[in-house]
Structures are given as structure tokens and as C-alpha cells.
Length: 178
Image (cartoon, rainbow, N blue to C red):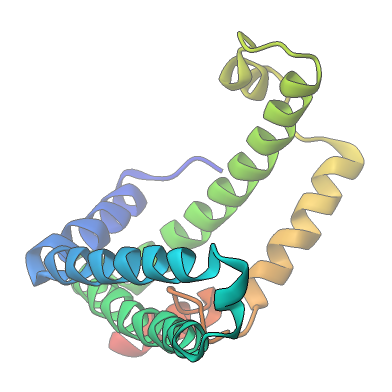
């Protein structure tokens, strides 16, 4: 699952495109608004009597709307950054790199979570989780279960709160650019 230099370049181009296009400034403003809204909602919900407060209901409804709106903005930004990478390295390298990034990210986060949970159960706060991951590749049933999970993730359809378009949509859009 090692990435080629062109695949790594495509992923880095995508990420740097977010800066070049100005997405990071917009995201920071939206994040500050979301953080304020969450804190306000938590403050309203902290008192038992305020559960019946219409302002709390309105705030929760607005927060849900805001999450969906932010996610839709983020999906557009992802498509714009994808386009920059595809125009520089081509669709094949970008799609291949993106698939490997999904694969490696999914495998790493799942395995790391399992190893951290096991270390916490043993109360081993000095566990070398990264070292264990390097020594213990997924094999057998674990590998098969991971591959099934990954294939499902790569075919997933879009939900309202997804901040990234599904892999299949991103791959199709990249190939359409060429």
C-alpha cells in the first residue's frame, strides 16, 4: 500500500490548494461560529428547567442546519482542491493516491484505536502503539474484515453531515476533468 511520489504529490497538492484558494480562512471563521453555538447550546442545556426553553430548541435546530450548511460548503471546497491536484498530476495518480489515503487512514485509525483501547485496559500508559502497528500487520480474518469495511466506505453514499464527498464521486469527478 505504499504510495508513489506522484500519489503523495497529488495529496499534498490537494491540501496546499486549500490554503492557496483561501479555504482555511473561511473554515476558521465557520469553526469559531460553530464553537460559540455549541457553547451557547451547552449553557442553555445545563439547567434542568431550560430544557423547555424555546431558545434551546431554536438553537439546536439552528445548530443542525449550520452543520449541514458547513458540510455542504466543505464538500465544495474539497472538489475545488481535488481539481487543482488533478490538473497538475492527472486523474489516475490522484485517484490512486486518494484510494491509498482512504485505505491507509482507515486501517491506521482502526488499528490504532484497538491498540490504544487494549493498552488502556491493561493500564499500560507507556505502550508503544506505533511500534506494535509496525510489527503486527493485519492478516487472515482481520485483513478480510478490514477489506470488507474499506470497500463499503469507498462505496458509501453522501450523508447531510459529510464534510467530504464520497470516494466514488471524487474519483468520477477527477476522471471527468481529463
